[in-house]
Length: 293
Image (tube, rainbow, N blue to C red):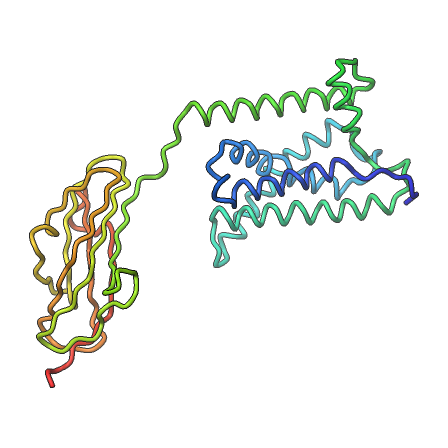
């Protein structure tokens, strides 16, 4: 490569968008912003495919601008589901962070290979996107000098329209999160640890039962506690529980195991108002109950 060959601004822009998307998804302060959604769409629908096409076709004679754009979208639509399918067969599963890391890693890897391949070519054969010239032309309002430049201007305008439309939708249309209920037990220190698991027959242990309603409506819950599939008595305030939306109940529960045994399953079962036979949430501890000394 000759010393005066320009740094590939299109690859730099794509890499910057990938890193920016990662920041807006992974940083807690930023991941509630509509910008996260606006950046996420290109990462799913365009950037991986563009990086792959840039790697496969480093020369300007390989593909025209519009062909690259069309193939970039097509390749992204093909590659993204394949990455998701591969993740589905791993221990990470198809979740947001593994997907983000996989898409980003794939895209950045393709960009690095594309950059290396372009450096191996003479400067007059390397494909480049005249981003600075294009931006200056758009700002100055001048006429495009070529069909490629005209196409790039149209695509850039469409991209900003999609960005603005997505942002407006996210701002104006409230996005409710998935409704859920938290169900937890706390130990003697008020934390999810130090549970009483060793008993002498006749002794009692105390746990704190926690229920947090995030179902966007008032919920009626019922609770049941079982030791080795045998129901244990519960105080009235934990048998029928009515909980308003976005409120939390924490109540102490004293357990007195009625029989001895080793490695016995102590279950805490929570039922909602729509399903009385199958637990909505369940927690369990394994306890030992020995003979009185």
